[in-house]
Amino acid sequence: MALLVTLAGCGSKSSSASPQKLVRTTNISANFVISTLDISKSRGFDQAGNMFDSLFYLNKQHKIAPALATKSTVSKDGKTYTFNIRRGATFSNGDPITAQSFVYSWQRSLKPSTKSLHPYLFKGIKNAMAINAGKLPVSKLGAKATDDHTLVVTLDHPIAYFNKLMTYQAFSPQDKKIVDKYGKDYGTTPEKVVFSGPYNMTKWKPQGTTWSFVKNNKYWDKDQVKMHRINMFFEADAQTSLNLYQAKKLDFTILTSDQYQNFKNSKQLYAGPYSYMNYLIYNQAATDTQLKKAFNNVNIRKAISLTINRKQIVTDLLHGSGLEPTGAVTRYLGYNAKNQDFAKLQDGGQSVKYDTKLAKTYWKKGLAQLHRNSLKFTLMTSTGDTSSKLAELIKANAEKHLAGLTIKLQNVPDQIAYQRATEGQFDAYLGGRGADIADPIEFLQPVLSNNPQNYGRWKNKTYDKLIDDSTTDNLSANGRWQKLLQAEKLLSDQQALTPLYQNYNYYLKRSTLHGITHNTTGAQWNYKYMYVTK
Image (cartoon, rainbow, N blue to C red; front, top):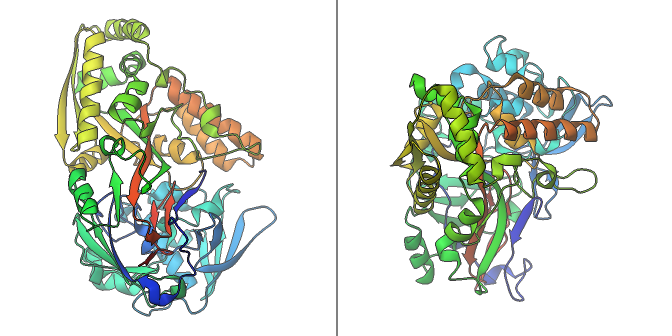
């Protein structure tokens, strides 16, 4: 559970099934639409593992395995990694994948004009942050191609989770020739990008609800890929997707919390946690001066949080298809040397408690400090049954217990909500965050003062130093762990954002569909080992 749940098939069929018994095409549902095929500008990487390989990948045994790097070595001081790039590996157009393909890709993602949402992932690679801040040219990045098949990466300090990072698609190679050819249109259609993973993309446009993955015959490990075509369908209405599954037009579908309770005893039901935490985020840089002051008041933030009954959310709203948070970091993500889950050790404190009496105390104190007797704000959430119901529940409970509070609900399409969040155009926002790799830093680093994913614009120098120390100081594993625990406690004590619930996903899958790998971090779905039997 710490890393992956592999949705293997039921019955006696196995991956050794003879080729003549395999079905090469399948139809399955998707969690999200895809906004771009440009990995430097991507919002997320839910399906990216099917199109892009990195230096390493997580195999079906749940271990870090060689991908576009056949092996790596690290210096004694932990600051220099040397990767041997796989000979003969090519992009889907036949262009060779070289060490320079990685250097170019990383430099492009860090270039300020690219406006990547993931520069923080490169933190610790020599000069990465200075380049992203526009203080140094990209040529100064600590990633060099000493020849076509040797990539040398220099770090400012040892990074405990560096090999995990190298499984992530944000570090995949890019073909400079193709990027230059299409310019601003790069990644806007499948024809204007090339792929390094097991599948190519076809029949897709940005925000489109249907597309297909087609086997990449130029892929270095193509013999492992059994499927010729995987037709993907995203349905905003979950019932439509379920109806298609029941009509045998889909072999796999993702269930909502409402649907899950009707399939608790089904042999076709599969489940697994996902390292995605849902939050209530307050805009502490709101354009409205009075609202900005209110959201910068910790007592106001604490009061609102304490009116939220997370057990009620998980039990009544999600019907058991979610997990109550213990703090800012999800369960089943990071473990120390004693195999203790970070989420069980973190001190979420009042940030995850339900205490309406204490909420009223904080509320009165906060309003008195603001010299006000009321507060009104708009809570933005993306369109969707669960999000809408969650917003209504938060509004009802908060207004019931906090005299003078008025919350207006604003439901907008997911992409619009996301765009407004990144631009700070909201009062409060129901959003969330998923982990890229299996390490607690994934939920703590995005809340740094200068991180573009810190949508609430909370700033705290002590917190910034704790996170920086946990990644820059040459700490022992336990020393680093303690820094992260201290940072999480500060984050929770200050109620920088309010944890609501962790995703726990349920799916229906036919017994003839095998080999889907569900990652609990990073690219959520991997179909490299998928196959269908008759």
